[in-house]
Length: 93
Image 1 (cartoon, rainbow, N blue to C red):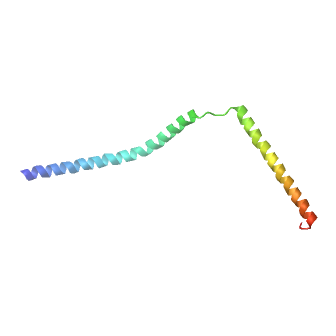
Image 2 (image 1 turned 120 degrees about the vertical axis):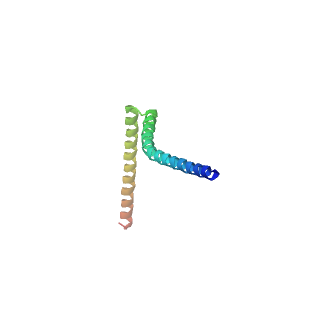
């Protein structure tokens, strides 16, 4: 009789373990879509926290970048022209 009780307890533990592993597998499958949904919810909340620049700030920053590009381009063009002139005087060009 003791053997039957211990055998039934062992079977119960096995069934319980199988149920737990099945539940764990279901949870793992369910977590993947939830992670994606959670990612996009978090992304949306983070975008709400961002302080977006005003139109005036964007125009000022864009103007500064364009002016810097023109000045650098003119400086490179000037150096290139000067080196070509010097090389022509020396006879290397």
